[in-house]
Amino acid sequence: MQRATMRRLEIGACVASVALAAACQYYYTTPAPHHFTNVDSIPFDSIRAYAHTLRFDTVVYAADVRRVKFDSTGKSKVDALGDSARIEPESGAWNLTLSELAQGRIIARIRTDSAHSANGYGPWWTWWWVDKRGAPGDTSWRSVLLPDSLKTLIHGDMVFADHSPFEWRQSIARWGSQWSTCTRSGCCIKE
Image 1 (cartoon, rainbow, N blue to C red):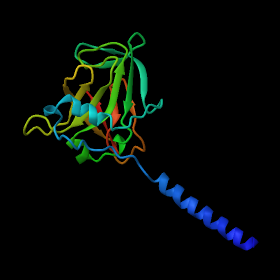
Image 2: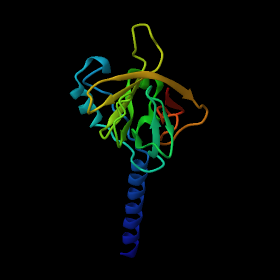
Image 3: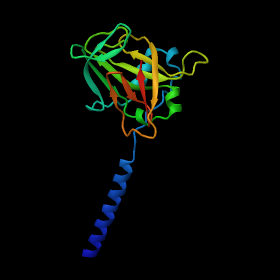
Image 4: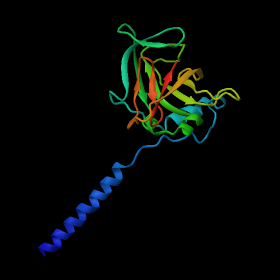
């Protein structure tokens, strides 16, 4: 009797260990937008619907909340006298491939206490979209800010920085030069 009980406990512990190991290996994957392929030519409600399917990391040190000043061109710099600004990375952005990113993804969301028209930032969510789908024949990376309140697109330049052989293990977004992880070994920097 005691042997049978011990055997059942061993089997139970083994099953629990396998289930826990399987659960720990699961990574959230950023879903592709299935109802559109080009962010420039769809109704804003489709962008909003896609954005609401995503997960954003609100934890401090993954997300960043600072006082930031924005100039008339949309550039930002950390400044103690600036507006309170929050940037939260999309939880699966760190695990995107270059080809997935080139097709287009939202990599972060941004909110500030007051309106900053050059970026479309304000007391609403502005989603940060990155892709390689600019003008025909243009293969450079681009940044597109999608402010929910303004329902408009704000195009800008972006630099992709590859940090190989180093790899991210989570999504991170920061103010200063406004950057966010956007592939396993790269980050996107808004210019």
